[in-house]
Amino acid sequence: MTTTRNRVLADIRKAITQGQRPDHQTHSFDVGGIVPQALSAEALVDMFAERVTEYKAWVGFCRMAGLSAAIAARLALAGSRYVIPADFPAAYLPQQEFVRDEQLSHDDIAAVDGVISLSALGIAQTGTIVLDAGVGQGRRVLTLLPDYHLCVVFAGTIVLTVPEAFTRLRASITERRAPLTFVSGPSATSDIELNRVEGVHGPRRLEVLIVDAPGH
Image (cartoon, rainbow, N blue to C red):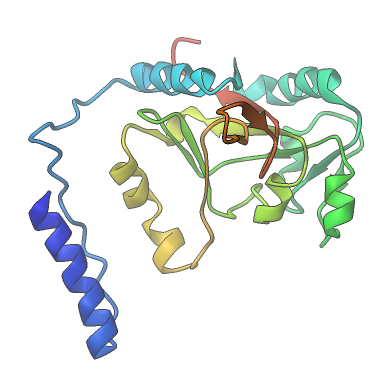
């Protein structure tokens, strides 16, 4: 861990003093000598679903062929007016009206019942969903202002660890310079008396549809 820390700090010093950008080489992380064991695709999905549920988020499973029907079933329980990213694939949507984000104002986004988005990947160990402004994910504000967020996660994009996630996101970071949003359950915080308050800086309700999960 100390070696990795020294390498990262050396990169930062080089960038500050010499104006050189780090070469973005992958550092090996030694976490107390513990190397994560490889898991099957089914085990990864199960771990991810379990961790997401622990954050008080709803998790469901569906096949690709049934995605639009699964989305329709969840939306019927949450409201009637939903916003979607401008490039959200129409083939995934049920036959109902949606508000596409054509540079909507913050007030217009906050006024809808919820938002539907795709995702870049999921992290099984932490139950975290990552958005990188890719296709079907939209602007960051789009998934922060509405009270309800239905997020689609494809089983094949679920990785085990955070370092694996950053490896997968390398092009988003270094080439697209995309903003990353890490979502670990519904937005929540605690006041000074440790009373949980939800919906402070993001959706109060998070639901996750895992698509084409092995064994489900």
